[in-house]
Amino acid sequence: MKPIDEQDIAEPGLVVLDITGGSEDAVQAVMAALEMRWAISGIGPVHRDPGKPGVRARIYADVLGPGRECP
Image 1 (cartoon, rainbow, N blue to C red):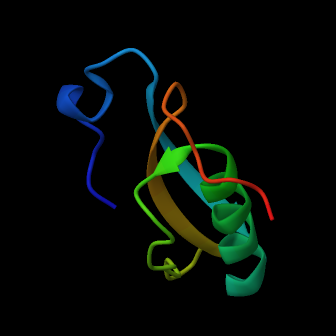
Image 2 (cartoon, helix red, strand yellow; image 1 turned 180 degrees about the horizontal axis):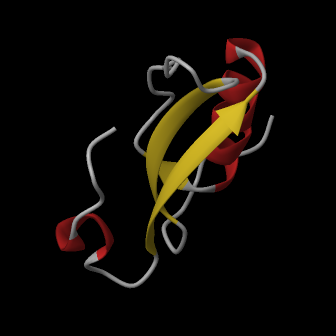
């Protein structure tokens, strides 16, 4: 994944979250749950890094902005 730069976190409430889990399903479930709470960049691609356990994904979120309504 590319390095996080100042623009990624330039405003109050902006965060970058790197999520690591044992499976794609687990990481996608976390992204879906966060999408219901905050304005995020969407459910992104999941990557497997050679030689490292698990899978990873990165999302960008505005924790001060409105999320979606929980069903």
